[in-house]
Image 1: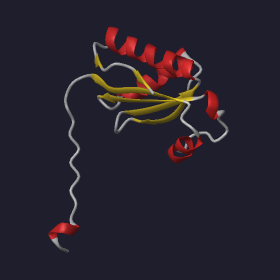
Image 2 (image 1 turned 45 degrees about the horizontal axis):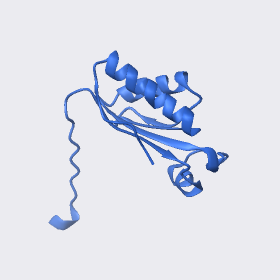
Image 3 (image 1 turned 180 degrees about the vertical axis):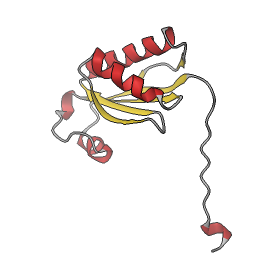
Amino acid sequence: MELKDKMTIIQEFVPGKQITLCHIIANPGETLYTKLGLDPQTDYTRSAIGVLTVIPYESAVIAADISMKSSGAEIGFVDRFTGTLIITGSVSSVESAFSAVREYFVNKLQYTCCELTKT
């Protein structure tokens, strides 16, 4: 095996408490839903996908719980090993869910947080 055939993946973890990405994709279309493995029964014309990443990674579970309890959003994917959370629902329910997550994490858990963005 030659050197060029060897691949090393380095995953860096920055200590701290922060939401590093908080983004809403409004009206994403069927292709994106399909590629992400999300519910194919969704009304794509009135839907949204929310993507959030958080450190420490296990906090994604807390964010998922808050998202479900604070709005009509549904969990599309949550990973406690990478800190990734994907939620789906109407634009207003995803926005409401992420607003609740940001408020709890900043005010109760003392996290730093990026701005909520939407496309």
